[in-house]
Length: 381
Image (cartoon, rainbow, N blue to C red):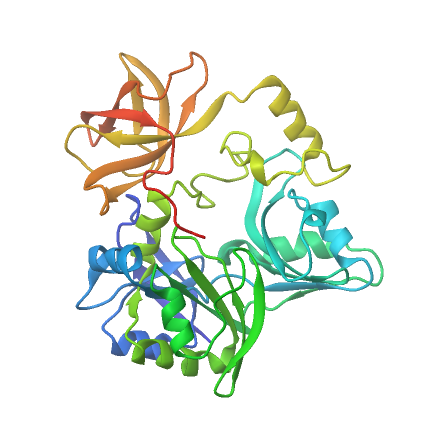
């Protein structure tokens, strides 16, 4: 479902924009509205930013301390099927799909020949002839286009963006909630299994982007309401994408368009762990190998403010009188109760972890310390 509107997006990472376009809506939109959700556009979709009676801080705390559910149906969905589909995907995307078995999922990147990142996504391996992909909302069409253009005869790439909803149940209490509903919870991290809730089939994935133990439920579009209602009735707090952003920033997880882009390579973003360097082929291989060998001119670092202030994206960073980088994301950390940021910092001269720099926050310089993310300990397993 789509509608036409002109919306002013609330500030997220310091960006305020007036947008006029068609925005898609989740199948749960009316349920979000009934819960007093504030909406904002994300990747062409109008999605909940936060809910009445909660707000970002409470929603964030629920995920860190208990359990919360996010509607992330704006995320893309695509399927690659046909003889040798997994080998084909593996020849295109960066990570080595041959390292995992059917029933497992893998974080990977779709790169341009230049080494820039078209998108970061999760690949779910069903078998040698069947791979399910979850890209970011705004990049789904481009990922599908590139794969379709490269696919040999017999391999079909299908855009399923509006065929499935996705609900992310995250937090230390997430397993207990799903078990209460009779859903499977004991499969390994980065694996998935099929299940049903009442008449709603789904795939239960041990994945997420909050740093907590959690699950992502991939549900046919018309079954999303049944599953959402069951989760809310079980006492799970609904959480918006504002809390999702503070949670992923605390973990140092990249967001495409901020820490990854066509101008920011996996080598610069310290996402080289998601690159199968020994594979004979993947998009951008030659450029990335060359950058890795030469060393990147900038790398992604973490910043913890030692002074007062809340950093946002695209704020200059100084060491003395010299600008040494720029923030990519910034927020107030509800867990650490300080301002934190991710930033691209020049590698020459090298600044060690612990070095004190200054962030220009709206014309006022505030001291911050360089640290290695994550800012809080992960509990994904």
